[in-house]
Amino acid sequence: MHTLQILKWCIPILQLCMALPIIYLCVVAVSATRAAEKRQDKTARRALISSHLRFAILIPAHNEEALLAGLLNSLATLACPKDRCTVYVIADNCTDRTAALARATGWVQVYERSHATRQGKGYVINWMLQQLEAAQAIYDAYIILDADSKVAPTFLHAMAQELVRGSQALHAHNVVMNAGESASTALRWLALTLMAHVRPLGRNAIGGSSTIGNGVCLSRAVLLRYSWQAFSLTEDYEYYLSLVQDGIRVHYVPEAIVYTHMPTTFTQMRSQDIRWESSVGRPATWRIALKLLRDGIRFADIVRLEAVAELLTPPLSLLACSCISTGIVSLLLWFPPALLLSVVLSIALSYYVSTAFYLARPPSSIYKALLHAPSFMLWKLWVYLVLSRSKKHTAQWMRTSRPA
Image (cartoon, rainbow, N blue to C red; front, top):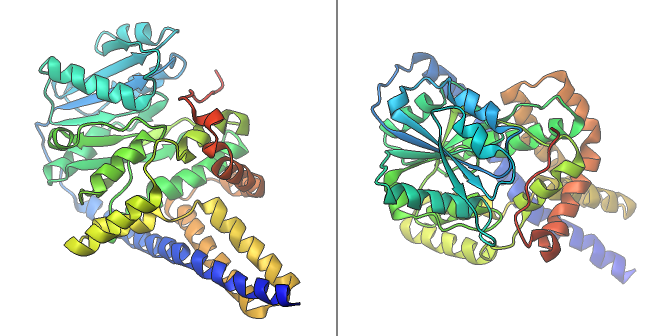
Protein backbone atom coordinates (compact mmCIF):
# COMPACT_ATOMS: atom_id res chain seq x y z
CA MET A 1 0.00 0.00 0.00
CA HIS A 2 2.82 2.37 0.87
CA THR A 3 4.44 1.67 -2.53
CA LEU A 4 1.21 2.55 -4.34
CA GLN A 5 1.02 5.87 -2.50
CA ILE A 6 4.58 6.72 -3.52
CA LEU A 7 3.77 5.76 -7.12
CA LYS A 8 0.66 7.94 -7.06
CA TRP A 9 2.64 11.02 -6.10
CA CYS A 10 5.46 10.27 -8.50
CA ILE A 11 3.03 10.59 -11.40
CA PRO A 12 2.22 14.32 -10.83
CA ILE A 13 5.94 15.07 -10.50
CA LEU A 14 6.57 13.45 -13.87
CA GLN A 15 3.59 15.29 -15.34
CA LEU A 16 4.89 18.64 -14.12
CA CYS A 17 8.23 17.91 -15.80
CA MET A 18 6.31 17.15 -19.01
CA ALA A 19 4.16 20.25 -18.64
CA LEU A 20 7.08 22.68 -19.03
CA PRO A 21 8.10 21.63 -22.57
CA ILE A 22 4.46 21.19 -23.61
CA ILE A 23 3.64 24.73 -22.48
CA TYR A 24 6.66 25.94 -24.44
CA LEU A 25 5.45 24.10 -27.57
CA CYS A 26 1.98 25.63 -27.19
CA VAL A 27 3.45 29.13 -26.90
CA VAL A 28 5.47 28.46 -30.04
CA ALA A 29 2.36 27.15 -31.85
CA VAL A 30 0.29 30.23 -30.94
CA SER A 31 3.14 32.52 -32.02
CA ALA A 32 3.57 30.62 -35.30
CA THR A 33 -0.13 30.98 -36.13
CA ARG A 34 -0.10 34.72 -35.50
CA ALA A 35 3.19 35.16 -37.38
CA ALA A 36 1.84 33.28 -40.40
CA GLU A 37 -1.22 35.52 -40.58
CA LYS A 38 0.88 38.70 -40.30
CA ARG A 39 3.39 37.40 -42.84
CA GLN A 40 0.65 36.75 -45.40
CA ASP A 41 -0.48 40.37 -45.14
CA LYS A 42 3.09 41.68 -45.46
CA THR A 43 3.90 39.38 -48.39
CA ALA A 44 0.89 40.66 -50.30
CA ARG A 45 2.19 44.24 -49.95
CA ARG A 46 5.94 43.50 -50.17
CA ALA A 47 7.78 45.19 -53.00
CA LEU A 48 10.56 43.41 -54.87
CA ILE A 49 14.04 44.23 -53.65
CA SER A 50 16.76 44.32 -56.26
CA SER A 51 19.98 42.75 -55.06
CA HIS A 52 23.52 42.45 -56.38
CA LEU A 53 24.47 39.76 -53.88
CA ARG A 54 26.54 36.85 -55.14
CA PHE A 55 25.65 33.36 -53.94
CA ALA A 56 27.59 30.10 -53.80
CA ILE A 57 25.36 27.02 -53.59
CA LEU A 58 27.21 24.05 -52.09
CA ILE A 59 25.86 20.53 -52.66
CA PRO A 60 27.64 17.74 -50.75
CA ALA A 61 26.86 14.53 -52.63
CA HIS A 62 27.74 10.92 -51.86
CA ASN A 63 26.51 8.49 -54.56
CA GLU A 64 23.51 10.69 -55.43
CA GLU A 65 23.23 10.13 -59.19
CA ALA A 66 19.63 8.92 -58.82
CA LEU A 67 18.34 12.16 -57.25
CA LEU A 68 20.91 14.87 -58.03
CA ALA A 69 19.44 15.66 -61.45
CA GLY A 70 16.20 16.80 -59.84
CA LEU A 71 18.02 19.39 -57.73
CA LEU A 72 20.16 20.63 -60.62
CA ASN A 73 17.10 21.00 -62.86
CA SER A 74 15.35 23.07 -60.19
CA LEU A 75 18.46 25.25 -59.70
CA ALA A 76 18.50 25.90 -63.45
CA THR A 77 15.10 27.60 -63.12
CA LEU A 78 16.07 29.97 -60.30
CA ALA A 79 14.93 33.54 -60.79
CA CYS A 80 18.47 34.85 -60.50
CA PRO A 81 21.04 36.10 -63.05
CA LYS A 82 23.59 33.38 -63.79
CA ASP A 83 26.51 35.63 -62.88
CA ARG A 84 25.06 36.08 -59.37
CA CYS A 85 24.93 32.40 -58.48
CA THR A 86 27.49 29.59 -58.79
CA VAL A 87 26.58 25.99 -58.05
CA TYR A 88 29.22 23.66 -56.62
CA VAL A 89 28.72 19.89 -56.41
CA ILE A 90 31.19 18.13 -54.11
CA ALA A 91 31.31 14.45 -55.03
CA ASP A 92 32.48 12.94 -51.76
CA ASN A 93 33.88 9.38 -51.84
CA CYS A 94 31.58 8.60 -54.77
CA THR A 95 31.60 5.28 -56.60
CA ASP A 96 28.83 6.15 -59.06
CA ARG A 97 28.31 8.78 -61.79
CA THR A 98 27.49 11.72 -59.48
CA ALA A 99 30.45 13.83 -60.66
CA ALA A 100 29.92 13.00 -64.35
CA LEU A 101 26.22 13.85 -64.14
CA ALA A 102 26.98 17.26 -62.62
CA ARG A 103 29.72 18.02 -65.20
CA ALA A 104 27.36 17.15 -68.04
CA THR A 105 25.24 20.21 -67.26
CA GLY A 106 28.05 22.50 -68.44
CA TRP A 107 27.34 25.13 -65.75
CA VAL A 108 27.96 23.30 -62.47
CA GLN A 109 31.37 23.47 -60.84
CA VAL A 110 32.41 19.98 -59.73
CA TYR A 111 34.92 19.10 -57.02
CA GLU A 112 35.81 15.52 -56.14
CA ARG A 113 36.97 14.56 -52.68
CA SER A 114 38.11 11.25 -51.21
CA HIS A 115 39.11 10.50 -47.64
CA ALA A 116 39.18 7.16 -45.84
CA THR A 117 38.10 8.39 -42.41
CA ARG A 118 36.85 11.98 -42.59
CA GLN A 119 33.52 11.22 -44.18
CA GLY A 120 30.23 13.03 -43.78
CA LYS A 121 28.59 16.34 -44.59
CA GLY A 122 30.50 18.37 -41.99
CA TYR A 123 33.91 17.44 -43.38
CA VAL A 124 32.73 18.11 -46.94
CA ILE A 125 31.47 21.61 -46.08
CA ASN A 126 34.67 22.51 -44.24
CA TRP A 127 36.85 21.21 -47.07
CA MET A 128 34.86 22.99 -49.80
CA LEU A 129 34.91 26.34 -48.01
CA GLN A 130 38.69 26.02 -47.73
CA GLN A 131 38.93 25.31 -51.48
CA LEU A 132 36.92 28.43 -52.31
CA GLU A 133 39.05 30.61 -50.02
CA ALA A 134 42.25 29.23 -51.56
CA ALA A 135 40.91 29.99 -55.06
CA GLN A 136 39.85 33.51 -53.96
CA ALA A 137 36.27 32.70 -54.96
CA ILE A 138 34.51 35.23 -52.75
CA TYR A 139 30.73 35.35 -52.33
CA ASP A 140 28.33 37.41 -50.23
CA ALA A 141 26.45 34.34 -48.97
CA TYR A 142 26.77 30.56 -49.03
CA ILE A 143 23.83 28.15 -49.27
CA ILE A 144 24.09 24.46 -48.41
CA LEU A 145 21.61 22.04 -49.98
CA ASP A 146 21.17 18.28 -49.74
CA ALA A 147 21.52 16.47 -53.05
CA ASP A 148 18.08 14.83 -52.74
CA SER A 149 16.23 18.16 -52.70
CA LYS A 150 14.61 20.62 -55.09
CA VAL A 151 14.14 24.37 -54.67
CA ALA A 152 11.37 26.76 -55.65
CA PRO A 153 12.21 29.25 -58.45
CA THR A 154 11.95 32.18 -56.00
CA PHE A 155 14.27 30.56 -53.44
CA LEU A 156 17.25 32.90 -53.96
CA HIS A 157 15.06 35.98 -54.22
CA ALA A 158 13.52 35.25 -50.80
CA MET A 159 16.96 34.74 -49.28
CA ALA A 160 18.32 37.92 -50.89
CA GLN A 161 15.44 39.97 -49.48
CA GLU A 162 16.29 38.92 -45.93
CA LEU A 163 20.03 39.45 -46.42
CA VAL A 164 19.44 42.96 -47.74
CA ARG A 165 17.38 43.67 -44.62
CA GLY A 166 20.39 42.82 -42.49
CA SER A 167 19.99 39.15 -41.58
CA GLN A 168 23.26 37.18 -41.54
CA ALA A 169 22.11 33.60 -40.94
CA LEU A 170 18.97 32.26 -42.62
CA HIS A 171 17.13 29.01 -42.98
CA ALA A 172 14.73 27.80 -45.64
CA HIS A 173 11.27 26.25 -45.40
CA ASN A 174 11.65 22.47 -45.82
CA VAL A 175 8.69 20.68 -47.41
CA VAL A 176 8.30 16.93 -48.05
CA MET A 177 7.77 16.55 -51.78
CA ASN A 178 6.57 12.91 -51.68
CA ALA A 179 4.28 13.19 -48.65
CA GLY A 180 1.50 11.11 -50.25
CA GLU A 181 3.73 8.25 -51.35
CA SER A 182 3.36 6.11 -48.21
CA ALA A 183 2.23 6.23 -44.60
CA SER A 184 5.81 6.79 -43.44
CA THR A 185 6.34 9.78 -45.75
CA ALA A 186 2.99 11.24 -44.64
CA LEU A 187 4.02 10.99 -40.98
CA ARG A 188 7.42 12.36 -41.96
CA TRP A 189 5.56 15.34 -43.46
CA LEU A 190 3.88 15.96 -40.11
CA ALA A 191 7.14 15.69 -38.16
CA LEU A 192 9.02 17.94 -40.59
CA THR A 193 6.24 20.53 -40.72
CA LEU A 194 6.28 20.80 -36.94
CA MET A 195 10.08 20.89 -36.63
CA ALA A 196 10.97 22.86 -39.77
CA HIS A 197 8.02 25.24 -40.13
CA VAL A 198 5.85 25.63 -37.02
CA ARG A 199 8.71 25.78 -34.55
CA PRO A 200 11.10 28.12 -36.40
CA LEU A 201 8.21 30.40 -37.36
CA GLY A 202 7.00 30.57 -33.75
CA ARG A 203 10.50 30.80 -32.27
CA ASN A 204 11.39 33.74 -34.52
CA ALA A 205 8.11 35.43 -33.56
CA ILE A 206 9.03 35.40 -29.86
CA GLY A 207 12.57 36.61 -30.57
CA GLY A 208 14.33 33.25 -30.71
CA SER A 209 16.41 31.56 -33.38
CA SER A 210 15.63 28.89 -35.92
CA THR A 211 17.77 25.77 -36.04
CA ILE A 212 19.56 24.98 -39.31
CA GLY A 213 19.63 22.07 -41.73
CA ASN A 214 18.94 21.56 -45.40
CA GLY A 215 18.72 25.01 -46.99
CA VAL A 216 20.82 27.05 -44.58
CA CYS A 217 22.17 30.36 -45.90
CA LEU A 218 25.16 31.96 -44.18
CA SER A 219 26.72 35.30 -44.98
CA ARG A 220 30.45 35.52 -45.55
CA ALA A 221 30.78 37.57 -42.37
CA VAL A 222 29.25 34.76 -40.30
CA LEU A 223 31.47 32.09 -41.85
CA LEU A 224 34.59 34.17 -41.30
CA ARG A 225 33.68 34.59 -37.65
CA TYR A 226 32.44 31.02 -37.14
CA SER A 227 34.35 28.69 -39.43
CA TRP A 228 32.63 25.37 -40.03
CA GLN A 229 34.04 23.03 -37.40
CA ALA A 230 30.99 20.80 -36.91
CA PHE A 231 31.77 17.18 -37.83
CA SER A 232 29.36 15.02 -35.82
CA LEU A 233 26.46 13.06 -37.32
CA THR A 234 24.29 16.08 -36.46
CA GLU A 235 26.66 18.70 -37.84
CA ASP A 236 23.87 21.17 -38.66
CA TYR A 237 22.62 21.26 -35.08
CA GLU A 238 26.15 21.44 -33.75
CA TYR A 239 26.85 24.53 -35.88
CA TYR A 240 23.53 26.08 -34.84
CA LEU A 241 24.57 25.73 -31.18
CA SER A 242 27.86 27.50 -31.90
CA LEU A 243 25.84 30.44 -33.26
CA VAL A 244 23.23 30.76 -30.50
CA GLN A 245 25.88 30.44 -27.78
CA ASP A 246 27.13 33.81 -29.03
CA GLY A 247 23.60 35.20 -29.33
CA ILE A 248 23.51 34.92 -33.15
CA ARG A 249 19.93 34.58 -34.36
CA VAL A 250 19.06 32.40 -37.36
CA HIS A 251 16.13 33.91 -39.26
CA TYR A 252 13.54 31.59 -40.77
CA VAL A 253 12.43 32.42 -44.33
CA PRO A 254 9.13 30.60 -45.12
CA GLU A 255 9.12 31.90 -48.71
CA ALA A 256 12.48 30.19 -49.48
CA ILE A 257 11.13 26.71 -50.13
CA VAL A 258 13.20 23.53 -50.34
CA TYR A 259 11.44 20.32 -51.32
CA THR A 260 12.92 17.22 -49.71
CA HIS A 261 12.57 13.62 -50.88
CA MET A 262 11.89 11.35 -47.90
CA PRO A 263 12.41 7.58 -47.51
CA THR A 264 9.22 5.62 -48.09
CA THR A 265 9.60 2.81 -45.52
CA PHE A 266 10.69 2.48 -41.89
CA THR A 267 13.63 0.36 -43.06
CA GLN A 268 14.88 3.14 -45.35
CA MET A 269 14.31 5.70 -42.58
CA ARG A 270 16.63 3.85 -40.20
CA SER A 271 19.96 5.52 -40.98
CA GLN A 272 18.37 8.97 -41.36
CA ASP A 273 16.56 8.76 -38.01
CA ILE A 274 19.67 7.53 -36.21
CA ARG A 275 21.65 10.44 -37.66
CA TRP A 276 18.99 13.00 -36.68
CA GLU A 277 18.58 11.73 -33.13
CA SER A 278 22.21 10.84 -32.49
CA SER A 279 23.92 12.40 -29.49
CA VAL A 280 27.33 11.05 -30.56
CA GLY A 281 29.76 13.91 -31.06
CA ARG A 282 27.45 16.48 -29.49
CA PRO A 283 28.58 18.35 -26.41
CA ALA A 284 26.67 17.48 -23.23
CA THR A 285 23.15 18.92 -23.47
CA TRP A 286 22.93 20.04 -19.85
CA ARG A 287 26.32 21.73 -19.98
CA ILE A 288 25.27 23.74 -23.04
CA ALA A 289 21.88 24.54 -21.50
CA LEU A 290 23.46 25.88 -18.33
CA LYS A 291 25.91 28.02 -20.32
CA LEU A 292 23.08 29.39 -22.48
CA LEU A 293 20.98 30.09 -19.39
CA ARG A 294 23.85 31.83 -17.58
CA ASP A 295 24.80 33.98 -20.58
CA GLY A 296 21.16 34.64 -21.44
CA ILE A 297 20.50 36.06 -17.99
CA ARG A 298 23.82 37.92 -17.92
CA PHE A 299 23.25 39.67 -21.26
CA ALA A 300 19.42 39.72 -21.06
CA ASP A 301 19.43 37.86 -24.39
CA ILE A 302 16.19 36.21 -25.55
CA VAL A 303 18.05 34.21 -28.26
CA ARG A 304 20.09 32.29 -25.68
CA LEU A 305 17.22 31.94 -23.21
CA GLU A 306 14.78 30.64 -25.80
CA ALA A 307 17.43 28.23 -27.10
CA VAL A 308 17.52 26.65 -23.62
CA ALA A 309 13.82 25.78 -23.88
CA GLU A 310 14.30 24.33 -27.38
CA LEU A 311 17.36 22.36 -26.35
CA LEU A 312 15.67 20.74 -23.35
CA THR A 313 12.38 19.91 -25.12
CA PRO A 314 12.13 16.12 -25.53
CA PRO A 315 11.07 14.55 -28.85
CA LEU A 316 7.34 14.65 -29.60
CA SER A 317 7.11 10.85 -29.50
CA LEU A 318 8.51 10.80 -25.96
CA LEU A 319 6.09 13.49 -24.76
CA ALA A 320 3.11 11.76 -26.39
CA CYS A 321 3.97 8.34 -24.95
CA SER A 322 4.53 9.90 -21.52
CA CYS A 323 1.09 11.55 -21.59
CA ILE A 324 -0.57 8.28 -22.57
CA SER A 325 1.39 6.19 -20.04
CA THR A 326 0.74 8.50 -17.08
CA GLY A 327 -2.93 8.65 -18.03
CA ILE A 328 -3.24 4.86 -18.08
CA VAL A 329 -1.40 4.44 -14.77
CA SER A 330 -3.51 7.19 -13.16
CA LEU A 331 -6.68 5.42 -14.33
CA LEU A 332 -5.52 2.03 -13.05
CA LEU A 333 -4.60 3.52 -9.67
CA TRP A 334 -7.68 5.75 -9.79
CA PHE A 335 -5.93 9.01 -9.02
CA PRO A 336 -8.30 11.67 -10.49
CA PRO A 337 -5.96 14.72 -10.16
CA ALA A 338 -3.21 12.98 -12.14
CA LEU A 339 -5.74 11.61 -14.64
CA LEU A 340 -7.13 15.11 -15.23
CA LEU A 341 -3.64 16.52 -15.68
CA SER A 342 -2.85 13.80 -18.25
CA VAL A 343 -5.96 14.75 -20.22
CA VAL A 344 -5.03 18.45 -20.14
CA LEU A 345 -1.47 17.76 -21.27
CA SER A 346 -2.70 15.48 -24.06
CA ILE A 347 -5.08 18.18 -25.30
CA ALA A 348 -2.29 20.77 -25.21
CA LEU A 349 0.04 18.47 -27.15
CA SER A 350 -2.74 17.76 -29.66
CA TYR A 351 -3.16 21.50 -30.17
CA TYR A 352 0.53 21.84 -30.98
CA VAL A 353 0.31 19.00 -33.53
CA SER A 354 -2.88 20.42 -35.07
CA THR A 355 -1.03 23.67 -35.85
CA ALA A 356 0.81 21.86 -38.64
CA PHE A 357 -2.51 20.94 -40.28
CA TYR A 358 -3.91 24.44 -39.83
CA LEU A 359 -0.90 26.22 -41.34
CA ALA A 360 -0.07 23.76 -44.15
CA ARG A 361 -3.57 22.47 -45.09
CA PRO A 362 -2.37 19.03 -46.31
CA PRO A 363 -4.35 16.58 -48.51
CA SER A 364 -6.58 13.91 -46.99
CA SER A 365 -3.89 11.23 -47.33
CA ILE A 366 -1.95 12.90 -44.52
CA TYR A 367 -4.92 12.60 -42.17
CA LYS A 368 -5.35 8.91 -43.03
CA ALA A 369 -1.71 8.28 -42.17
CA LEU A 370 -2.43 9.22 -38.55
CA LEU A 371 -3.74 5.66 -38.13
CA HIS A 372 -0.10 4.57 -38.31
CA ALA A 373 1.04 7.16 -35.76
CA PRO A 374 1.30 4.69 -32.81
CA SER A 375 3.78 2.44 -34.63
CA PHE A 376 5.68 5.50 -35.87
CA MET A 377 6.00 6.85 -32.31
CA LEU A 378 7.24 3.49 -31.00
CA TRP A 379 9.81 3.38 -33.79
CA LYS A 380 11.02 6.91 -32.98
CA LEU A 381 11.28 6.01 -29.30
CA TRP A 382 13.38 2.95 -30.14
CA VAL A 383 15.68 5.10 -32.28
CA TYR A 384 15.92 7.87 -29.69
CA LEU A 385 16.41 5.71 -26.59
CA VAL A 386 18.40 2.80 -28.03
CA LEU A 387 19.83 3.00 -31.55
CA SER A 388 21.00 6.64 -31.45
CA ARG A 389 23.00 5.92 -28.29
CA SER A 390 24.71 2.81 -29.63
CA LYS A 391 28.23 3.13 -31.04
CA LYS A 392 27.43 0.19 -33.29
CA HIS A 393 24.93 2.35 -35.20
CA THR A 394 26.66 5.74 -34.92
CA ALA A 395 30.31 4.88 -35.50
CA GLN A 396 30.24 6.37 -38.99
CA TRP A 397 28.05 8.32 -41.39
CA MET A 398 25.68 6.16 -43.45
CA ARG A 399 23.82 7.27 -46.55
CA THR A 400 20.04 7.09 -46.29
CA SER A 401 18.77 4.35 -48.59
CA ARG A 402 15.97 5.27 -50.99
CA PRO A 403 14.12 3.62 -53.84
CA ALA A 404 15.62 4.06 -57.28
